[in-house]
Figure (cartoon, rainbow, N blue to C red):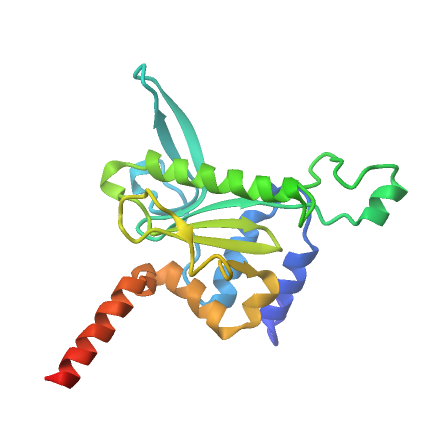
Length: 223
């Protein structure tokens, strides 16, 4: 990366990326961690029970007949988040026309859907459901992580939170208007701090904590 401005280099490279998310999402997460100065994922071990911050964390889905099937979380940090990655197509309508294709057509490894389309919205919603399913498949002693992150590599990070520990209501965080962190938003210190907190101290973002703190401060002042 450019030592003079690693953030700008990261944003530029991420925005230019394309293809299938499997080719890019791990590098995206690693370089995001580097520019934010936070720990990056660790090597996976032979014992899945020890994999608390890794890519491709294995989980087991239990079925009513007693059987199980395996799933893999794209990136997992215990007590922090589940991250599910996708990569949208960036092909313009003009480029598609030049290839004799419709704007919604697919080429091999061309990404899941064109950004900003209904198909893209569906892909992101499905990714969120998949991440929530993973949360329920985690070992019981892990509990439910407070955050679910849906990453469209080089485009946007969608943030959902449930601080209850029950995993039943992952809601837009901090609200429906600003739950999406676009790649260019990473230049903003506020967005950088939000992601750092998700990675290092997620419960510091719990609104209930802030409300309790304000209540205590008011009580102290009245006393």
